[in-house]
Length: 278
Image (cartoon, rainbow, N blue to C red; front, side, top):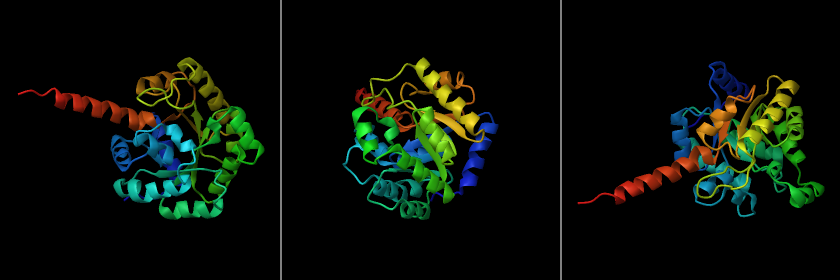
């Protein structure tokens, strides 16, 4: 069974990875088998949440933004029954919907901690939403600030906090709230069978990630910064970004860490079985 770590223990583990000259690699996992083999491959941190569950069921990750499941309840269930039973040492974080108006956030965070999670991630996040829908949400109290408040409360409860941010303004708020790691979010990952088709170029992603990284490190030198999504989808993409963004500490995989390998691997094995002849 997986084990729970204190916030300081998670930070210490991640800082050791950076000190060795290695990138931090964290993955959002939607199945127990993803968690099991990401840990075996050396992942530093795992998160679980319904968005990951949808992509590993064959649907778009974006289905996690629709009202078709109890997001926070599903996260707790995934952790308890799918991820914790098959992991050993890697810290596990809960991807939480900070705008869950049906729950008392303090009580939810206590439940998350008691379940065995070592940290949280603001996922799903409205940092990924723009336009009239974002405006309508913000004007009616369903806001990024609610996610910030959740992170501040999680910090008080000594949970490790890593946070999706799509801009320096969002990073500014999260760092003020005491977050431990900023995840520069470049949008839904491109590629594979159900990935996005619209995303900024890799060079534009480098520029945006650098802006968030530079700002975050200047505001709090202790904050770790990693990147996720968009055109930073495959190891070669991350290699390109990692060599160009000064101060970047690592990468968070979603589809990159579990869906792409499964799509490719199962397709190739099926084709090999079908190629057998007498």
